[in-house]
Each structure stands twice: as C-alpha cells, then as structure tokens.
Image (tube, rainbow, N blue to C red):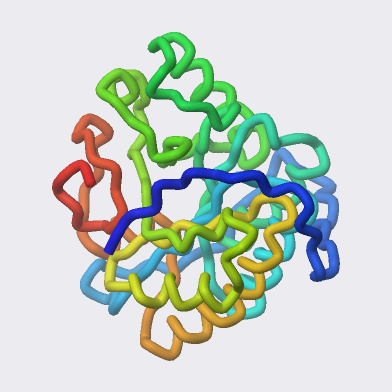
Length: 254
C-alpha cells in the first residue's frame, strides 16, 4: 500500500452533475453539539476504517459528501482549509459535526509548510484552529499536512497528531469514479485511514462513495472518525512522536 502524496493538480472546469446541497441554517450556532457515537470499549469494536476528506469546506461538494454519509449512517473526518471557511461554507461544517463527523485542520492556505518559518507554521495552524472552534466549539486534534510535506520544524511547531492516509488520486479530474473506488478498495485494511477530497466540483468522489461505502459495510467494516479509530485500536496519541499516520497502529513516520 502507498500512502497518498496529496499532490493537487488544477481542478478548474469540472462541474458537478449532482444537485447542490446547502445545510439548513442553525438558529443557535453557539450551541452546536455532535451526535453521540456510543460508549464502546476497544474490545467491542470489530474492523474499523476512517474515511477522511480534504480541502473543504464548500457549499456544494461538502454537502453532497455529507448526503452520502448520512444515507448510509456513517461518519467521516473533514480536514478543513482555513481560507475556505466562510459564513456559507460553515453551514456544512456545522452539519457534519451534528452528524457525528470530526473536524480537523488542513492549514490556512494549503501551502508547503515545510518551507515556512516556525512562526508562519504556527500562524497557519492557529488561524484554522480558531475558525473551527468558532463553528463547533472545540479545537481539532488532527492535522493533515498539505501535500503530506513535513519536516522537523513542523513537528516541533504543531501540537496536533499528523495524519496522512491511503489515497486514490481523486484530486485528478482524469481519475474516474470507478477507478477511485477500485484504488480505494485495493488498499483497505483494518485500522486504515482513507484519504479523499471534497473540494469544489469533485463529483466523481461523491459517485465513488456510493460504491465504496456499501462495499466496506458489506465487508464488515465500521466507518468511524479518526479519534474513534485510534480509540478502537487502543492507540494513545502523543503529538511529539513524529509519526504521520496512515493507519492507527503505525509506529514509524510513514
């Protein structure tokens, strides 16, 4: 298996064929609460996988992804770009959190942070952490480095657990929904983190999810958030361990 490099190509010109979705407005956004995900012990879990989504939020594809998750009664983790958070896109962040999904940090600008100073790295993280806290009331636990580009300066400057994942190059327009499905299924295993993208117009990943999720459920997987994945596997996370996780029980950087 090969963890996704998260190298993003141009996405212009791809238009969604799926009906646009905007989450309903919340009358009391300051009181947003997540649904209960139950109270299991690690021993009570079977096979688990975390579906994760990068590059949102937006008012179209993020909502379409949530529609599919809600249809099958499963949860995911959304890694947000701070500069994509605005009053309109925040409605889908609220919706995701209410559904029991987890909200995580994917930087402010989606730049190569391994080329930044410690001060600039911290500014990227703090900006997005604060935006997320404004919406859901709590700061994230997880960070996905843009392009999965990391260095020691980033580990020293960011007090979050670093997440990579197994990807299917779904940021590439030329990769069909069927290819995204097959590449994902070729890499699944108990404890894996699947890396997908809910960026604007990425309707082929929405289509692929309609194949991926039922197949994972048929194979006996429970689809959980990143926090629940590590809990289910009995992994105690330490932000100072310099690991970029693609599966829960990983013990080396990659």
